[in-house]
View 1 (tube, helix red, strand yellow):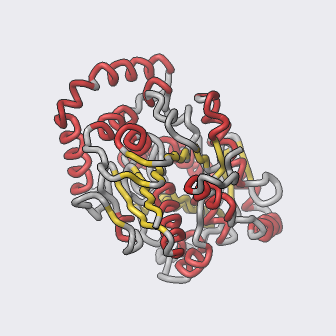
View 2: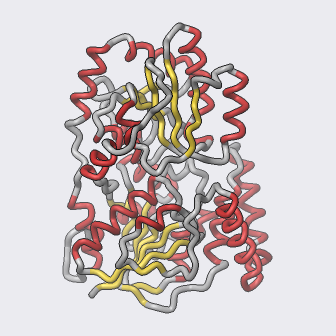
View 3: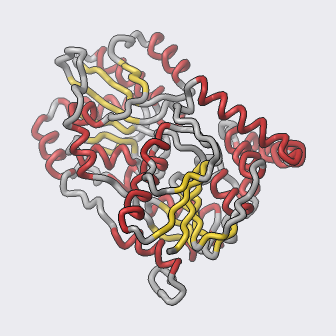
Length: 410
């Protein structure tokens, strides 16, 4: 039986982690593989959804949210342990200083978490066992750990994001992709953006679209009551962590304009994150406390998504949004920003709206959709035509286990 190892940064409720759970279930259902999972920071609610036969290699896992107090303690403990493990923090001090300078020089927002990924990957013991295939299912620590501390006959890495916009650089990565046989990207645009940073690895890049449990999503959408606030106006829903990337600051301004224009709209955000405090202040500033609702994380967001009049995904950048795909499965009208990832999922003017990300354009497009029920109906019908199942992608990854296979080699 072939031994497969999957490595992830954490097991919090996010897109890549959700997709990994579906992949593990898919592989486990065949009974053909000995599956193992290792999390660099062994914390997150999704550990509960890992199939029983998958070996979780972490000695101790925390099932709480990464944003809860116990979760933050676990993160702090992992960083502290890594810093003093073989004095790794002191050995990487020069690396971190150089990369902070590079981030500042680029003019982008400083992202210290990107620097800590290298520390966390280097500050944990490597795996002694040799695997037939080892896969880093996300960028950063998981990929660094796979490159430096895992023995495997075949190695592959996944990229889920707009790589340069997310703040990664070759100096930061230390050429961690050199030893990967394949680099799987979740969309064509994600692949192109990755190749802008690493043109020398273009021949390794392959498409692997997110696996989705369509039946499970439809079933869960019927479970639970969903909204109970008695609001009878127009519900806008967004699912995603509270992060600068997700553009919620622009959403708050757009909602204020909608309300000023007389539209009976309430915007619900399902997700949690470090930006909560800043968003609460912004919501208060624009006096939309009663209508821009930060609902926090939900184990089952699907009843809320199903009850939405419009699903909005106005992000600054994206890889490929699982939330958009879930909304499409539920037949939702989708308004999204025209950015990497989103424009590959939505055919503007046919099954949704793509717009330039600013408050005026977002307000104008939402008002246009709200005012045209026939257009809403047309988009909702077209969105259900989307193809969501791509079995050849998984076959391409598993072909790495077969030395004789030519599938995915070219």
